[in-house]
Length: 190
Image (tube, rainbow, N blue to C red; front, side, top):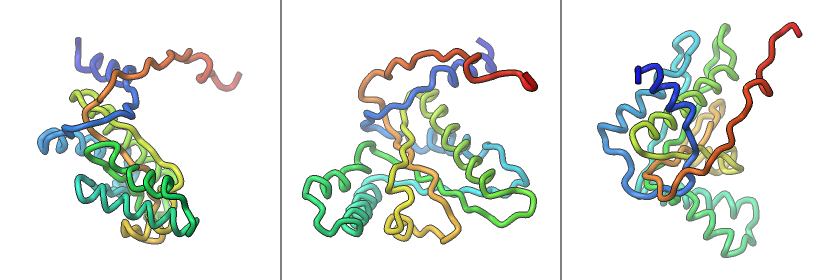
């Protein structure tokens, strides 16, 4: 198989892995995985992204932030809601949080910078799978919650793009139905 074919095969077989356990990638593997994010299309070479890496105590601290967010929204939140928020970051041994810096630039709109950060997340997902690991990209209400944003130190103009959970798959990948490209791609003008 040529290198080009292996890249296409990796993309065509990519699947989110919600059940993740130890081990997370080793430092050498992480360097490769993180390096792929830095190859995302980047108009103007703005480097409009930054990433936070959480393990162990960092994951527990993020769970504390999630609990604070739940309590800020509902001071009478149930014990079950609090426990669920606390456990959310612990679904994998490692997490990467992608942040778009949303820089002011006359030629590169903010949405393009956010997409660049998202492409970086996608590249990391493919790299994880290619190296025998798994990942899942999640967002949800915590990604935009004021308490979480402030606790993570986001600047007012920054956008949290998502939470990328990383680890070793604990179960087989779900079978994803193949889509017909003709249903999504068409010539223009018609």
